[in-house]
Amino acid sequence: MALCKRVLVGIAFFLASAGLILTVSGLASLQHLCYTDDVAATNSRKLLAVDRTPVTEAIFASCQKTMRFQWWGWALELVYVVILAAAMSVNADTTGVHMVGVTSTVLNMIFANDTLKAVDDASHVMYSRTTVTFVGFIVMALANYCFFLSHGSCSANACSGQSSARVPGAKRENEAPEIVATTA
Image 1 (tube, rainbow, N blue to C red):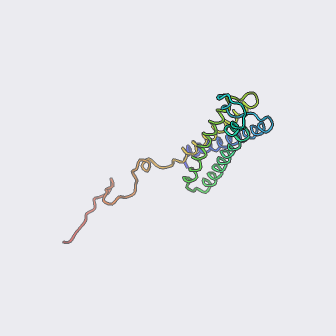
Image 2: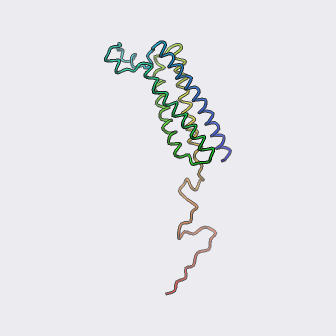
Image 3: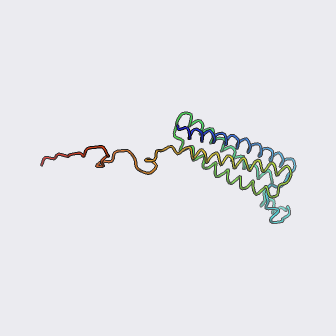
C-alpha cells in the first residue's frame, strides 16, 4: 500500500472514530432531553403553525420518535467501519464492504439534513446537542468519502481500460512479429 493511501486510510479511520463519538454523544443527549422535556425536534410545527390535536399527532413525530430511527445510521456506520477494518487487515477485496459504506453515507447525509432542519427550532441546550449530532453525521460521511477515495488502487493503464493482458493478434512494442508457416 502506498504511503499516500495509508495516510488517507488513517485519516479516514480517525474521522470515522471522531464522527461515531460525536454522533453517539449527540444522539444520546438528545434522546435524554426528549425523555425529560419532550421538546419538538422538527421545524414542521413552526412552519405550519399547528396545535397538537389527535390528527397532527399522527402526522408529526415527537422528539422521541424522531430520534429513534437515527440510531440506525450510527449503528450501520459502526458496522461498516468494523467490517472494513477486518477486511483491510487480511488484505481482502473491500468492494462489497464499500456497498455497505455507500448505504451508510446516504443515511448519514439524510440524518444530517434532518438534524439541520431541527436546529431551526432548537435553542439553548437542544441547539448545542443538535449541532453536535449534525457535525457527527457530517464527519462520518466525510470519513466514508475518504474510504472510497482510498479504495482506488488500480494503475493508470487498468483504470483507462488499457490492460497489459495479451490480446490475440496484438503486437507489443519490443516483440518481433510472429511468422505463421502454413503448408498448403
